[in-house]
Image (cartoon, rainbow, N blue to C red; front, side, top):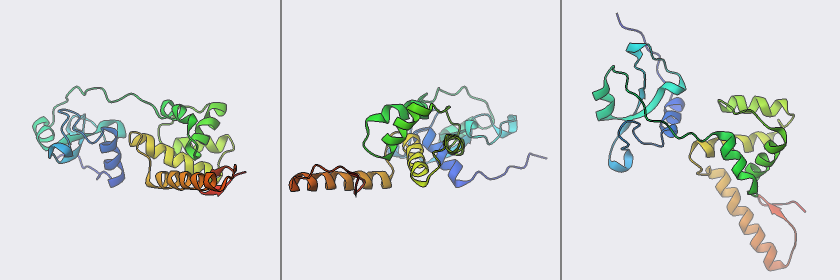
Length: 182
């Protein structure tokens, strides 16, 4: 009798595909090449592999079904870390930039998940709603390879528009996310 598998949630499937850059980890093909991607266990369940995030990877149909229950040496995934990415964001004029500057002062430990990041921020006393909003959007943007979330992009556009309007009026006020700061 085989091992009973628990289904992998949509969220975890999405994160596995995102982690691999929406490309098959074995051959590099993806949706742009007309391939449908599946979430594969790098170490097959039949060989003792589990459904931990580290063991879930993107795989095209051919590679997933051709591999079957064999263990294949994986290519190395991109090694950028969340904190490495965040520290580069210090020059941004938005909440993610503010979070990056705060992190420079507090020196967080590399988070394994957003939950871990949120716990660290609470410990440093930065658990207000705005900090958590920025942390969530920073986490998602980093996981998406630097592509801003819709909310952050919308706020950036509002900020640029407010600054243009202030320059036209001759104001020297600072606008941030559509709100007057000074």
